[in-house]
Structure formats: structure tokens, C-alpha cells
Length: 390
Length: 91
Image 1 (cartoon, helix red, strand yellow):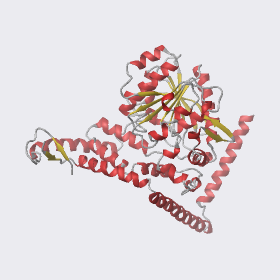
Image 2: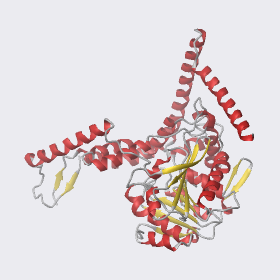
Image 3: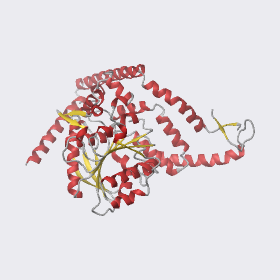
């Protein structure tokens, strides 16, 4: 039982007046019941990934989307690279709560590579399949369609793929933004500890298809915050009387429980190269017999992390900008969690303005700067130069 | 300021959760917990593999298609489709 202090109550210990409490309580619970039944019955489930787009390229299960939504030509292109383990619609969660929508509003030509749902045909896909195969192919298509080289934004493992790709190619993107990208895997907590110390071999978690099943991924993430799911459901109950809030929580909860299989060979390689050898933190990752040095990244680089991130904690993400060889490599800490970097109020008020302001500066596009400048939350964003990290 | 007891159970939950979560998170990082997870994972794999093998064996003895046969067939079809696709691309 908790206690709180309220000035209007002068008694030593007081309970609410039953009549004054019952009426609003009945009204609120009626709204909760109605909204809850609507959601459970599927009548009011939030629609996700709604921004209009065209599929402009496809290879195996991967597709490349171009978000048009009435956009005019000549906009600077951006390529978004989602993680391999979740569905990509986190970038475009709901109308009004969409990173893609925010980028379109700020004048970008937005492309997104959707990795699709891996099946047994993808079990043999290594990290090199994505770093040297799918991503450069999609990048070339964007370049051709947009008529300019796109800047690249990667989130979580999508950021790992983008960074390793940028560390490999001579043809650098005009800018690279990493959002919540795990770098020092020794700081990742139980997820890496359990495989780093040899308790579980990566091959032990593969299923009959040769991939890591979604339920294993879900359990691994649930270990990070043991009461996280329960807290989410209590929050949903608490806000169920507000239809919009309930829809927002439902959409996010649904996404967070909807993992996709992780290609087995890529998983084994990820554990060996990134977790056990801690390759990103040492600055060198060997993939497909080729050394990828982070120091080879020469383009302007922005590393963004959330101070409340449970999945990729700040200690794991912070060193990234210092490892890139870019002349301009900045680090920004935002008061956000791992997913809060892409959705919700934090994304709208902090991540989007911070990222687009930075992009406008490095891409030297004054029309973009004008869009972004008004919205930057300079209090929340604390840019640090690479030198400050070293 | 005098304290007031809250009747809102969600506040009570979050107060408890706030105190309990850091302890649980520390526990999930402990060696004992990670050892237990590794053992549970091994047992679970062994059990499910045994059940699946026995089930497949019984079905195959009865002349019915088993899941492992279907998977083998599916793999062959996928390889064939990939070869055909590669051949189509080359031509």
C-alpha cells in the first residue's frame, strides 16, 4: 500500500467520500469495459504501418518501400534500416505516431528496407547476406530512383548492419545515423552474458527451420525486464477509459510481442563475432573472411541512444561514435527507452527534431534546416563531440 | 503533510513494481539464474526432440506422413525453386 501527500486533506488518515468516489469510478469503468470489448473483439484495433508506400524492389523475403504520401520530387532521400528481429512497422506505427510520417513532413524522400519474415530458406543467411547483399542492393535502387545517394538511419540490429556495410564500402553514404545500436556487447546484460560465457551455444536455440524462433527472442527480451509485460498490461488497464491512449498502448504491446524468426546462420555469426569477440567494440568485425573496420567509416556519423534503454543500455551504445573514422561523429543522449527513440512523444519531440536538425546541417540543405529548427528540444538533446568521448 | 492512503490499485502496483523490478533485474543477471536458464533450455530441447522423434516414428510406422518427412520435402521443393529461379535469372 502506498501513501501520498495531498494538501487538501488535513486529517491524519482519510478515506475518500464513497458517493464522490463511486460515480466517476462507475463512469470510468464503463468506458474501460466498452473500450476493452472493442479492442478484444477486434472492432477498434489500431491500424499500423498506414503511410502510403510502394514496394519498389524485392529480393528473397526483403522488400524496399518508398513512402510517397503526396511527396514531391527532389527531396533528399533517406533509407531506414530496421532490426532483423522485429517487424518494420515500428517506424510507421500509427497515423500521428509515425517516424516515417515525421520525416515526410520534414521534407525527406523516405525509403525503408523491410526484411520480411525469415523461414527455412533463410536459415543459411549470414550477416554478410544482409551487409554485403541485401542492403547494398537496396541502396543502389534508392540511389537510382531518388537520383541521389541516400543518408542511412539504422535502429538496433538494423544499425549494426548499416554500420558494417558503411565500414565495408568505398562509396559512403552522405550521412549515417545509428539509433540504439549495441556496440559494447559486454554491457548488454543477460542476453549476451548467457552466450558469452558458453552456457548456451547459439546453435542450441535454433528450431527445426534452422532459425531462432520468435518465442525464444520474446523470452530473452522478457528477461531484461521481468515485470515489463505485467506493467504494460496494468498501464493499459489504467488508460483503457481513454480510447486513443488504449489504442497507442495496444499497438505498441502488439508490436513488442510480434517478433519474427532470426536467420540461424546470422544469429550464430552474431553471437560469435559481436558478442563473444565483441567485434564492434574492438573496431574490427570479420564477416565472410573480410575485416570490417569501423575506422573506415568516413561519412558524417550520428550516434543516438536512450538514457532509459533496457535493451541496449547507454554503456553499450555510447562508445560507437568514438570508433568511427568520420571527421564529424556526434553522440546524442535522449531521455528515452529503446523503442521510445522511434515512437511516442519522445520520438516526436526529441528524436525526430534532433536527427533531422543534424541531417540538415551535414547535408547542407537549408530548406530542411528551416523545417527542423523550430522543433528541436535543446534541453533534452545533449550533443557531445566525438573528442569529448575519447 | 499528513499521509493519505490510496485506494488506486494501479498506484499500489507501480509502487511495488518500482521496488521489485531492480531486484528482479539484478537476479536475472546472476550466474545462478543464467545457469538455471541454460539447464531449462537444454531440458526443454531434449524433451521436445524426444517427443517429436517418437511421434514421427509412430506416424511413419503407420504409413502416415510425419513432420520431418514434410520438412524434408519442403526443403527439396525450396532448393528446386531456388535452382529454377537462378536459371531464370541467368537466361
